[in-house]
Length: 229
Image (cartoon, rainbow, N blue to C red):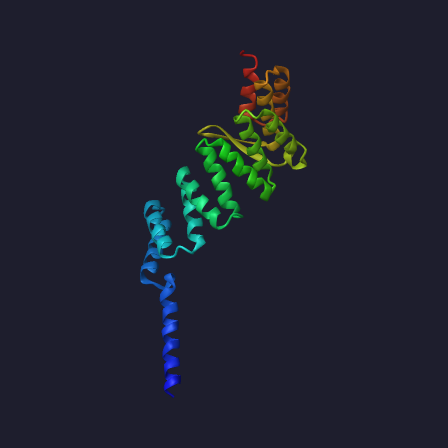
């Protein structure tokens, strides 16, 4: 009888310990979660971020909290912290495509082009996405790796979806233009040809980039620039 009573006491204590070890059950966690949700509702990012950090400290094993934090930084163009958080996510989950894309974009915005290229190449191996390949080609161009950039561009042009896939350019802060991936790649190849000193090939490529009649300010400017020199 005494043994059974002892067993019951031990069982209750064990269940109590499990309940106590669940951070989501604590009053502090519930309070900070309520603050976080309310601040998000009112778009008070500073308060929301502070509450989210407290939740991460209280429950460091909840991967979704880091996901929320990296998206918050990324949405507000805070590239350095978004990069650092995405790196922590990738340590825990190397296959996290969102974190990998954010890390690549953050490296690019921080002008760390070598690292951005490596991140985009890793991303492409996982998502086989045309836009990712375009970023690879463009970064190779920025790094003056023109032969590699042309090879990447040709991979895109061989894909039949290049004429359907759209990409948005912003000629200025108040204007956006949507062009086909094919036009964007032809413009990029034109820039490569220009850098290599092949003016007539560049002219041909820029002309093809604007041949569909859609506004493409960058390609038009690049074409006009050939006659300025």
